[in-house]
Length: 207
Image (cartoon, rainbow, N blue to C red):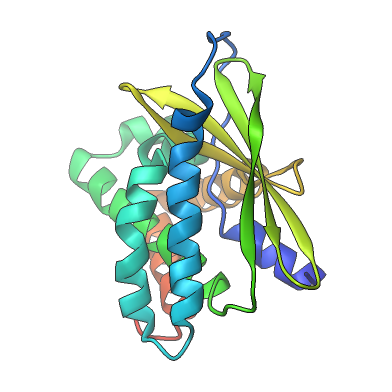
C-alpha cells in the first residue's frame, strides 16, 4: 500500500482513547465478533466495487459500522468536553453527520477487490480495560496491519480505537482536526466540515 493509501486508510478509521482500569479475562470470540462482521462488510463492498453506486454500498455498510463501533464514545473523545455545552438537538445533528462521514470514508477507501482477505489473530492483548485484536489486510502484493481496540459497554464489545500498522492511532489525527474546527466554528462549523468531506468522499453522490 502506498504512503497516500495508508494516509487515506488512517483517515477512514475512527478512534477513542483507552480507559486506565484493568479488566478481567475476556472471551476471544466475543471480543473479535464485531471485527469479523466489519471485515465481512468491507469485503462485500469491495467485491461490489465502484460499478455499484456509492449510496448502495454505503447502505450495505452503515448498519455494520453502527453495530461494530461505539461511535457516540468516539465522537465525544474526538470533540472533547466542549461537546457537553452543545444543545441536544445540535449534538444529534453532529452525531448523524459523524456517522455519515465514518461510513463514507470506509466506502471510499475500500472500493475494489483484488483477492484481499482479513486475518484476525487468535489471541488478545489487554490494555487497561480494553482488549486489542490484531488483524491483517492481506493482498497478493501487500500486508497492512490494523489493530482494533475493543471496549465492553452494556454487555457488548465494540471498537473504540483503530491502530494502523499496530501503532498509529486515529485519535491523534481526528482529535486534532475536530477540536481545531470546533474551537473556531463550534458544532455548526464541524457539521459543515463533515458534510463537505462526505460530498468529496462520495464524489457528489451524497449531499
